[in-house]
Length: 158
Image 1 (cartoon, rainbow, N blue to C red):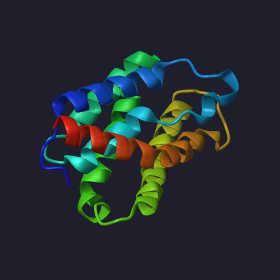
Image 2: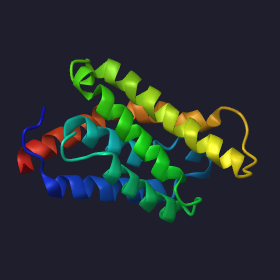
Image 3: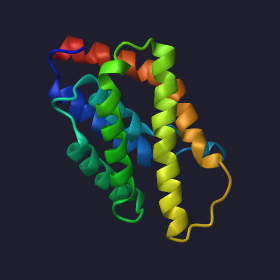
């Protein structure tokens, strides 16, 4: 879709995603916080599959592991899985209208959240229930705004 990738927009979007992922959020709303880095990995893998791949997504996941103080590799594996899944369907995903893309964002980030939840449960976390899927829902709601915003920034600065 985008022929020219603006690397400053890429760097700023990753930086903002990392800041928003580790920033303070109201206590009652914390479980509804979107998966910002997952959205950015989804966007750049979707828009620039030749420049953004599994290895870069894995490195960003490692950064998120360090920022969130989670066991090293948990988010890295999840971001790598997101990048892999988007790379396998990105040509088909380009033809989808925005509401259908939102559904795909929900599904792929839901897989991400389930994978992270499973690994944390295996390592001894005491969370239960399906509340870990709320970030996937809110990410799907945020996707159209983020997609349009990053597309416009990339066109203007690219």
